[in-house]
Amino acid sequence: MRRFAWAMLGLGLWVFEGGVEPAAGQDPQPTIELQRNRFNPVTTIPFKLSGTLFLKGHRPVVSLRIYNVLAQLVAIPVLRGTGKALDSLALTCPTQLGCAYSAYWDGFIANTGKPAASGVYIYQLVVDGQRVTRKIVVKQPPQ
View (cartoon, rainbow, N blue to C red):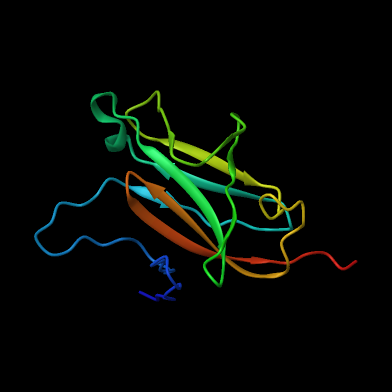
């Protein structure tokens, strides 16, 4: 399996390609799938959560954040269909099979009104403390 890893300063972020594998003798974790996205410069970030995360009425707490390569927070996307920022948001799922969600980022740096510069960014999904991280390449159109 091909993996990429980068340690991010101060936040302990790791970017890798491939699934999370449990250590020997441990039970597998519920499935959290952070899917690839395309950025141009607005992006939708799809993710799926397995039904086991919602057992007995549990509502997993989900956060999604976008960082630059210096591990500085760039933006917190919103959950599509709700308009709420994905910042410690408790999600629900009407089925035991799990649910697919989608986050939206308008391509602007939080609290500045400026568009994100072209380059590599990191997006990290945290579900009940379990982290899944991916990279994204932002390409702003020529001006």
